[in-house]
Length: 133
Image 1: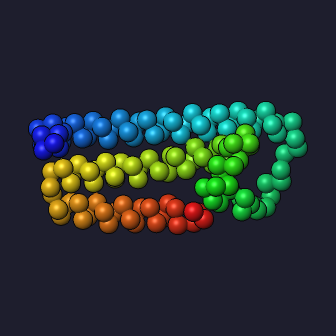
Image 2: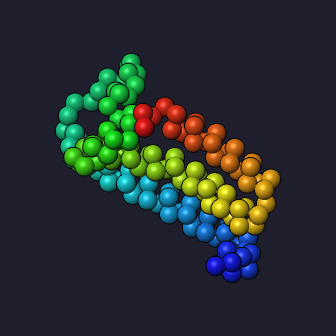
């Protein structure tokens, strides 16, 4: 078990490659989901009248929680699918920080583990602080 998490198995380069793959996969996944949601939005409401852009009303409160977003996705509502893609896109750097945290923990670098934990908490609060989880 000790050899599984040794420095030799997961060197710095390996961790950087894993983080790079994770970032690309997150961006591509989010882009595909947003594209599907955009196409669905055009199909569902492409023929409707254009909204008034003179006044910005903001997004309604209906997609401000994970459960509401998930319910919208299950019912194939385009705005929910687009919102899910945006949430995945915003969560991608968070995963990157988590991978870095694991890498620093494997290297047993306590100072960088603490710094990364602090950055992770700040980012998580910033990204998801407005959502009703």
